[in-house]
Image (cartoon, rainbow, N blue to C red):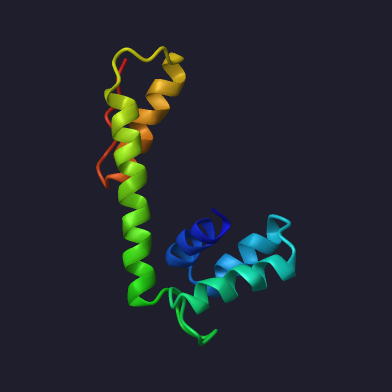
Length: 108
């Protein structure tokens, strides 16, 4: 989970900025180094610290992870029987729209 989170942040912000964000959030430097090392071993992050971040394989992995989360959100939203707080339901709808690259539909 930590490596997937890091992969998403690197893809969004680049390696250096993602590292800075993790440090700001209190992630120990050793943990950051371990996660980046794991991603590099799997060839998901470029070896060069000056590189923008993800390799082609890393980008593909990130896209699959996003697609899986979108699918999970879609299944959750499609469950009309679910007893959800209305605010949570609205948030899920907005988030699903943002993840899909669409403008969120405002209700109510």
